[in-house]
Image (cartoon, rainbow, N blue to C red; front, side, top):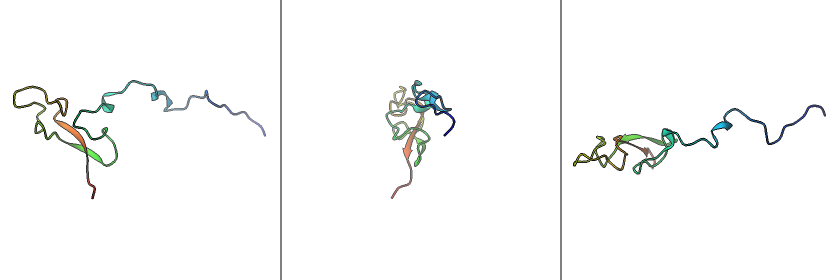
Length: 77
């Protein structure tokens, strides 16, 4: 058998994100059911603020963090 095998310390493409801090796409608002991009989910208007991002008193909606959008499960039986 010829050649050598590196075990443990080889750096493969894509490994650099393991210890990276979360990006904006990986944070959840209280009204989100899953991270954006999760299979079986989609973006929808926040039910709490009606998609405006603001409550009736003008304060930021806590459910969608002021975006007016939440990521929720779609479909299902």
